[in-house]
Image (cartoon, rainbow, N blue to C red):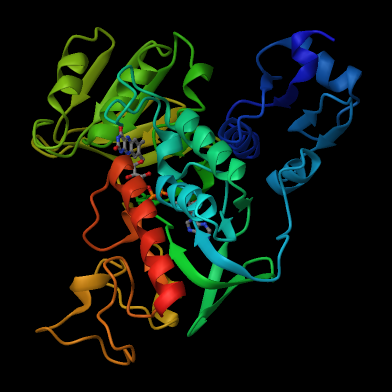
Length: 418
Ligand SMILES: Cc1cc2nc3c(=O)[nH]c(=O)nc-3n(C[C@H](O)[C@H](O)[C@H](O)COP(=O)(O)OP(=O)(O)OC[C@H]3O[C@@H](n4cnc5c(N)ncnc54)[C@H](O)[C@@H]3O)c2cc1C
């Protein structure tokens, strides 16, 4: 067997949103794969059309020779044995979200003897897996890719016996003392004595017409760690955002693309980007920064072909050709389900916990226990929040990991003492 036979082969066309979803999932699950762009090379078209008699792209060919035409991510995960059913009817601890906070909670929960399940909407790693290189995480002086960090954490959590259920989304919760029931989008449910919500934030959009149509077909959210190596030297990549994640992405793409442009609304990077990244951007010959500039329109038919830029100072507008637009605009929590379950949120939708729930020293309404809420506990006893989804959290990997671990300590207190 040659090396490529041991990988999943993904055939597809450039700018295909379906192919992007497959690549993104395989990348984030650490499944070895090769991407074969059929439109770029006639021999690849032949290989896809003749060798595999393909009628619909994308096509996935697996190491055992079997193939799936136009598969969903769920079908691929089933084929690879990554889609699992819960093994228990009840758990001690259910964690929602497998980003740094959720994975940390899983490591500590499972290693300390709690029957722990993690429910994740997509793949492990959360936002961190979008980061091409995390340079400020303790213990990795040379930096580590977010995907690598996440996969190590997944392995560690599974090693201690945590169950991780991918492609499952929590949509509704009912919480009684000592028993939380979470309903998942696929109709199944998870029952646990205590729960940790570690669902992080979702990327902000530009809110432009066509944006949803181009998602995965030229418009990408986050730093696109899985996509960078597909850029070639003639490509012009645009990155929107003026924070550290946008700057990291710019530096990462500059290794592959001919030109990288950061589109920044503010008048300076200094307020929001670490000095070491500003230095690297300034000394990079193929990275430019457009300050006081916004993307105001997206153009293309089935995939992105160009964008319109607007300079806020001069009012000038111009069109730039590109098929790569990465949006690093920060995020917002999606916690509508929490409001429906009676969990207190702040005006931004973040979950309020511990001392922040006390008003003039008074416990929250309907709080029945003879103690204050624990530090990371919501106003529903036994329901905790950790990481970016929590009101007042520091939006960093290390703090999310710390909160995941800390939440487990309070879970023990809750399970033991109520
Ligand atoms: C591009 C980029 C680069 C970054 N670089 C750095 C860096 O260099 N250093 C640093 O310290 N921080 C960095 N950050 C920030 C850091 O990644 C976040 O602070 C951290 O990931 C937050 O972890 P979390 O577990 O709280 O949430 P997230 O990472 O957001 O994970 C939440 C998880 O919950 C899942 N989820 C959401 N809703 C549901 C649901 N209803 N049911 C089931 N699952 C659900 C999501 O799919 C996701 O996997 C970066 C962020 C980005 C986007």
